[in-house]
Length: 131
Image (cartoon, rainbow, N blue to C red; front, side, top):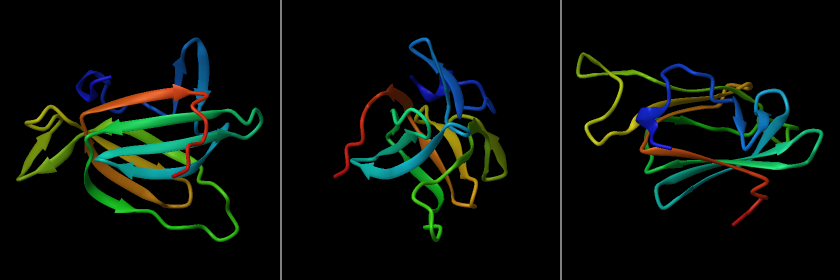
C-alpha cells in the first residue's frame, strides 16, 4: 500500500488483515527489526497464539532512530505507529517530493524511530525469517 493512501495519524498498531483483527500493541511483541536493501521489516509474534505478523516499510529513509535492548526482555511492545507530518525547512510536510510518507514508530520502553517510507505491506502468518 502506498504511504500517501494511509490516513494521517491513524493508529496502525490495530487493523484488520484478511478478515482478522490484529492488535500489535496488546497481543504481539516485536521480536525482530531488520533493514534489508532499504526496506525496514518488523516481525511480531503473538503472545497467545504464537502466530507471526510482518510489517514491511518500503524504501525507508530515517529521520531518527533510537533502538536499544531492554534488560530481561525478549521482545518489544509497540506503543504507537502512525503516518504523520514533519517540519522541514520551516514547512509542515505530509508527503515528500518522492511521494513518501513520514512514519512515527514508538515502543513502550522508549525505543523509537522516525522515517520516510514509500509504502507499507503487512503479512499475517509470515513466520520468523531470521537472517
